[in-house]
Every structure is written in structure tokens, then in C-alpha cells.
Length: 302
Image 1 (cartoon, rainbow, N blue to C red):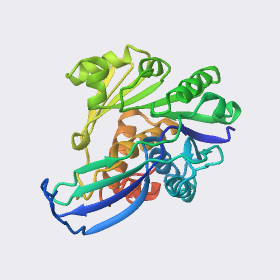
Image 2: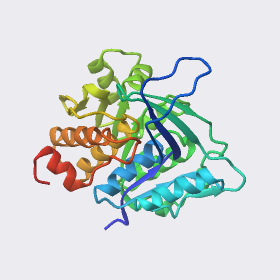
Image 3: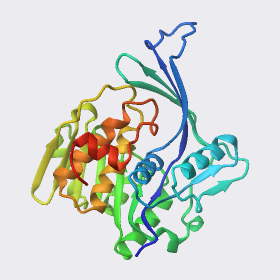
């Protein structure tokens, strides 16, 4: 048995979030927040937190500064029972905070973020034996050198590579070719393929190597392609408080379905449900359900 079910390599952040009645105009004004919270963030990190809530053994490999933000990011992951033993701490470096203003009327958000001053994680800073101790490797393309090295190791050791396609950056084409499962945002799909039509975009991405490709569509749900099949699933309706992290949570829940060898329709429905449930609370992680809560929400057995 492998030591972990899922190991993720990517970006971790710290989110400061507040809800306002309406987004303020560009003027010298003061707006009271009805809610405020501080939570861990980042695509891979939040996906791993989701998997941990669902009962999956996870580990995060990444790099943080030794500042207060970095210490809190690591603490929040550990509290979610995500293994952080392989986190590299860079002395004197500033980690990445984000300030997120949520519009109470719509649940939409505006993100103000500060670029991390932590140097990129290098392949030489990772333990290959540790990275290849999982069944699935989850990447976000935000630690490109490390992600490419880990994906190559995964290919040599029969580990499934899942990529969160959200950001276009140098090397992403090579990483996609090493990917088994690509779940992309609508914007990434259009930028990567040059196609705005969803089905053409999804098949163009599959032609690069991934066996399964999906596009997340926010409140419209998702579309998936595998083998000779295409599946579209609508989002589940909830009272939305905040959409922050919904895509990251979707990735974690989708990976859960892969681990359980569920059919694609069940996996998509489950990922949609877990992501929707997250949106009922402020922040990317506060609303992530346990497995029992998700199954009760769907009114099905695990």
C-alpha cells in the first residue's frame, strides 16, 4: 500500500475574506463588513484540504516563507490533517496573502493578492521517494520546475497525474502532455486551445495527451470528455454566500471519485455537490463537507 492517496505540489496562500452589502465605488469610502475570516488558500492546498475532509490521506509539497503568513498557511494545512513534513521553509521570504471582498448579493468576489517573494520550488528540493509514495499526484502548474519533475517521476512509477489548469505560463504545454486528468477553467481552456466552443476546446486538450479532460463552468456546472464520450452536468443549487475556492474544492472531490473508481457521471455529480456545499460559507475551506455530509446532501450511499 502506498503511504498517501494523494500528494499535491503547488501554491499555498493565506486568504483574508470579508462580506460587504455591495462592492464599494472607486472613492474614498468606508464599508463595514458583515463577516470576516482568515483561511488557508491556494489551488492544490485547498484541494488537499477537501480530500482530507473526505477521509483521504494527503500530503502537500511546496515552499513557504518563515513569516507569519507562511506559518499560518502551514498551520491551517496541518489542522486539516494534510501532511506538511515536506514543506520547504525559506528564511527571510514573504509568503502570499490575498484579500478577498465578497458581494453579499451575488456571492461573487474580488481578489487583491500580493505576489509571493518565496523562490520557486526546485526539483532538487523534493524527495523523489516521498513524491512517488502516492496513488495520485495533483498539480496546479504554479511550481513549474518541481511539477514537471514530479510528473515525470509519476509516469515512471504508475502514478496518475491530475492537473488543475487555471493559469497559462511557460512550460504548461509540456505539463499537459504528462497529465492523465486535466480539469481546466473555462478561461484556461480558451487560452490554451484558442477555442471558445467548449466541445472543440475539450477535444483539443485531450489531443495533447490527457485521458480525461474537464472544464469547470462555475454556476453552469462542468463538461467532461473521456474515451469517445462527452458528459455535461449542471451545478447544484444552493444559497451562495461565497464562491472563493469552489474550483479547488471541485478538483479535490473529483479526485475522490477517481480514487474510488466511480463512473464519470457519479464523479462529476459528487464534485459538483461538494463544490456547491462549500459555497454556503465564507472562504475556500470553511464550507467543505465531510463525506457523510456530502452523501446526505446527494441522498445517496457512499
